Length: 310
Image (cartoon, rainbow, N blue to C red):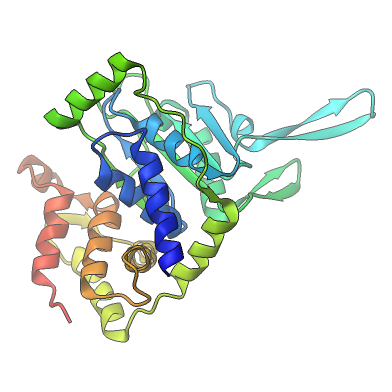
């Protein structure tokens, strides 16, 4: 456990070289990685969404691919296609960027729903089909999607139901004053974007993911998690509550939180922390709630205050 904790610390420190003042966001991305989930980063331009994804990819010696989503991006641009080779007189399969360990789908809401669905299918099934042939994605596998909420012209927002495919939805936010000053200093000195070398292997990540799955969640904590999910379906302000997939994501995320904190068992704080990470983006608020400026995060916080802690 001590050796594993050191690897997590090394990964965190390595990523902090590239993303200044966002330790909490980095921790949540690492939690999602160990839980085997996918991350959606939604924020205004220039706050470091792409830098965060590349910092993670550069810190692990696995394959990485970036998809710059545009309105004319097709499903084949993501999954791959079959091309006829005159020399071999046969069709040759050309794998797409989805067949990499870490895939960055930049500006996901700028591509068409058909292309979005192709990526979402890979995320769920962990395989692609090219001309009738199935290809499994390499493990570990993680998709990091980014989208810009401030410009809606020419975009195709992900439907609320499709957001359920992402384990976590994060907002990086603007840096605080001290972080901004540090960033300006490092930029002028020419070392803002330090080169990072891998500190983990793919095998390390797979090993830790398996260890996370072995973290114990006692029966009363499982009931606690179920009660939280069911509470989202009973609120008048919520028109569509958390799905069964949300429950499973919350449990796996809680295991990852416990593991990162050096425990092989979960405590109530792990379940509550996982709920705050995995549930808000899955909720659909009523029109009245949105007009009253009620946020999804507020609703989850209220539910956690009301559900009895074991």
